[in-house]
Length: 110
Image (cartoon, rainbow, N blue to C red):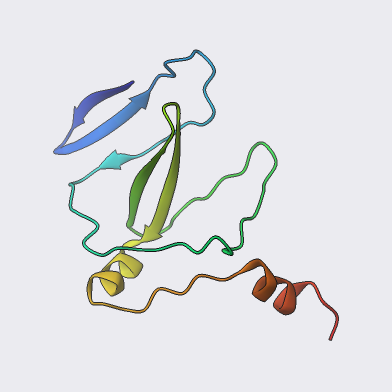
């Protein structure tokens, strides 16, 4: 369950695991909310990359995140820069890289 703490006019989240076994920590404030505004379809062939414990992503620009519920106890995060969000809102095409595309670019020898 998230506890909301007001700091300036932003919402700061402090998360607690309902199961007692946290899978991640969040360190951010929310300046405001909005709707995604566009459907994004992710192909079943989309490339999924697996990471060991300690994986981190840090943005050096404003960012936008969408939380996706999975079952009753899990979530996923779609995170992008505010510039990517702006392009999405303007109707820019969304491209999903498949595992085969990824292998052709980075794995297979030419």
